[in-house]
Amino acid sequence: MISDRTSGKKILVTGSNGLIGTAVCACLVARGYVVVRTSRSKSDRVGENETIVIDMAKALSPEDWRLALSDVDAVVNCAGALQDSAREHMTEVHATGAAALFRACELAGVRRVIQFSAIGVDRELPSAFSASKRAGEESLMKLDLDWIVLRPSVVLGRSVFGASALFRGLAALPVLPSMPNTGRLQVVQLDDVVETVIFFIEADSPSRIALDLAGPDAFSMEEVIAQYRRWLGWKDTVVLAIPSWAARLLYRLGDAASALGWRPPMRTNASLEISRGATGDAGPWKAATGIEAQGLSVALAVNPATVQDKWFANLYFIKPAIFIVLPFFWIMTGIISLTTGWQSGLQLLVGTAVSALAAPLVIAGALADAIIGILIAIRKTARLGLWGAICICVFYILTGTVLRPDLWNEPLGPLMKILPILLLHLAALAILEER
Image 1: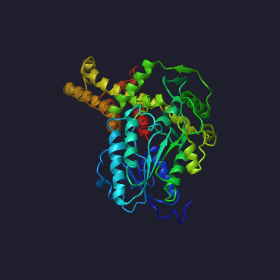
Image 2: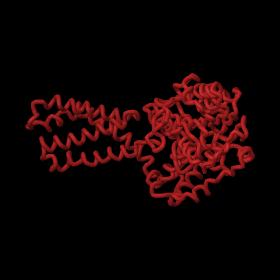
Image 3: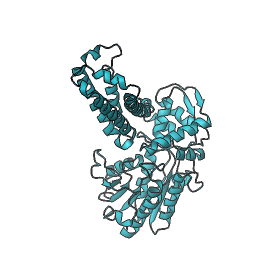
Image 4: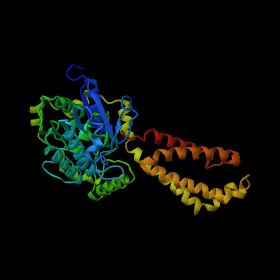
């Protein structure tokens, strides 16, 4: 509801493309606030085309924020990163970059700053993630600002990303995996988190306060996943205990994927954080805001699962499988074409109009296949690689039809098999986006 109290009030939200940032921006706009969105990348979603591109990992001076903070009444810092990788830089985002933003607020006269941290960082620092989040808190608390530090537990809602998406994916597996050394979770609902931000945006609300945002119940990870499984309409299933060595391998594979620019939730920092758990005292939160945190079972009950939710859950682990298989397929095709399959490649072109160029064409095709595989493996170039693969598939179908139409009638279907491969690349394009 738009009121005279909120109309025209200008709020800057960092990390506006993220799970919390997107929800905060939507609610602020609905309440009549003017929202200045900042993110490290542009968004094509409706209403977000004017996002200011500021990468907090690179905006390390207060001057970098001067224009964005013009006439701003309050700042909500939702920017975050799970672990250092090709695309994420924790210390710069959580500590150095955040400190520059807070100092810029002080210089610009923007007094009210709401900082998103993480639950438990005031008690224990099991990973670089927690340490950097704590450093960001401390840099804010030292300044003469009306600061509010919010430390949410694992945030769940209709929209999902990171751990919240992982829960749904795990719920779709035929057996319920149980990871070793996992602590209790007081999951918190995204709607409650957003309402807390709205409460503290008002200038007459409390300030210089740090609050845990935690749900009313503490669950094991398996209990959270089981609730999501029932929400999706699937019966309870067998629990499979994952050995410690297998869990360590999975986390290391997640680290390897992040080095290529992907952002899997299962990484080393995640394993360290989840061993501590995500619990806290929600009493001060309720006392300060009057917000009664909604329990997981209630939140799921009032938001029935849709067929789209089931699609997402079922596709969650199929997606990484696709982006492992496709690079392997293309790279190995290139290697085989230049080694053990060299003669077979030449034979395909013998007797055709290009038989004199058979060797260079096989080499060119092999190199193109390998390059396509490498592009798909790297997150930043995956879209380009997928489109390149689609173009090559179409090219192979057309040239094969012209030069060797008999291959359509081969028992092993060398040309026929390109059709499902082509469709798999189109499916990969459809599920490539992470947010």
